[in-house]
Image 1 (cartoon, rainbow, N blue to C red):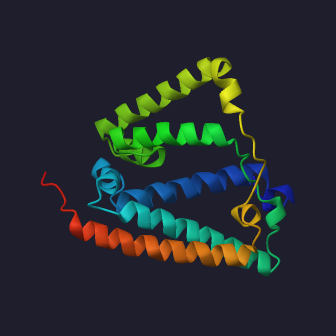
Image 2 (cartoon, rainbow, N blue to C red):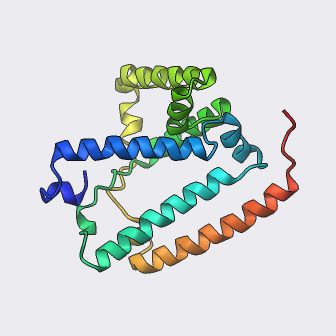
Length: 196
């Protein structure tokens, strides 16, 4: 839920329609970029194809810079943008489990849906595993609730964590992204792609 919905500029029904249209566009971009292939995501983990890293950094940069400029022009109130609560323990454990699933399956949830939509069997199996994981988590939640709710850190932004301005945080993130792109290019050149 974003500020435009809170302020009744966009109705909840229009919001769902926009989400549906954006979702179709997102799937089209993923497919045209080759992200429906499990080899693309696996290539990141093995170091011979870093396009996924570059795309996700670029998406983060675009959203961050866009929000900062929209805030600067008064088009959006950043205080109304929803931030997920941070539970540190479950974020680390969940990140490890999800990362392991990415490596084993070669997909993330979004790319698996995209690949399944064009008929890829491995993606359909991956989605089956995804739903099985959701079922296990849901049914086992009472057993892990204490761990899941541990280390609550509130709703922090990185700029608040480091006690710096949003603009300086954006600059540091841009520098980090450029360094990651440079390192990824160097690593990619040294790691030959496997022959299929």
